[in-house]
Length: 154
Image (cartoon, rainbow, N blue to C red; front, side, top):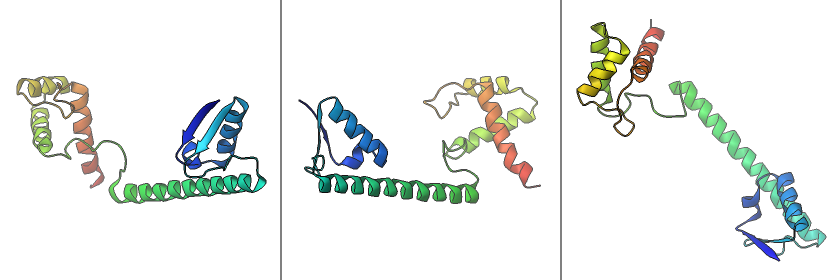
């Protein structure tokens, strides 16, 4: 017989129906499922089955509460700062603001984004991502992102 060992049944699934479906599939295909924290929960004893399903329902509730709390925290952060997830915008890290100022100065001279990227590369100024070369599209996005907050302050 093949054996699957899990730390706890809620590590198998945090949804009661999915957990019971997985257990059923394991049994159907001849696997023995062993939970380290809950011995004998998979026996045919009706009381053990009730406890397994009760614990599965608690795990599902707990997951729902975590999701709810995280969603609320993200919403509060987004309302407060305007963003919550993803990479920090260019300019958030030390030294990047100077690069943005250089981009703005070159743009004020009337240079196209591709030309600005070439100048930054020629000057040895590298991107945040592993020091790769600049491209006009990246320069365009950064400068447009800088202009967006200013447009909202008018």
